[in-house]
Image 1 (cartoon, one colour):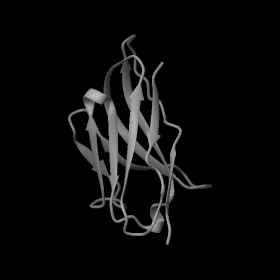
Image 2 (cartoon, one colour):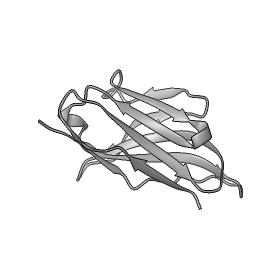
Image 3 (cartoon, rainbow, N blue to C red):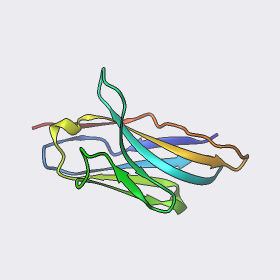
Image 4 (cartoon, rainbow, N blue to C red):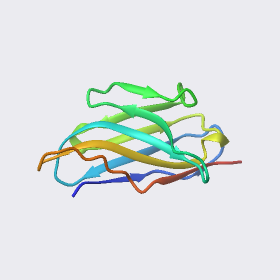
Length: 120
């Protein structure tokens, strides 16, 4: 079984930074893209950023220049560095990944989410 666990969410003030982590565990052969989404209550889940297995990244316009993705392939972990946080970044952040398990096939599990609150 493969699962994702996010961590790092917190309450911070505007302008501060946070780093979210997404750790994949289980019988994993490889991980393709790791994706970060966010969702506020009553709203659609929004794609925030994507990092592929070769390190290529894409960001939503709303976070470009403030958020940075990275990944540690050996640790099966991805990171979302969030700088210059704004109140509008307040959401639950979810990690999702395209994972090939050792048994074959392709899985796309989701983490449980981590709350980020930006408020003075």
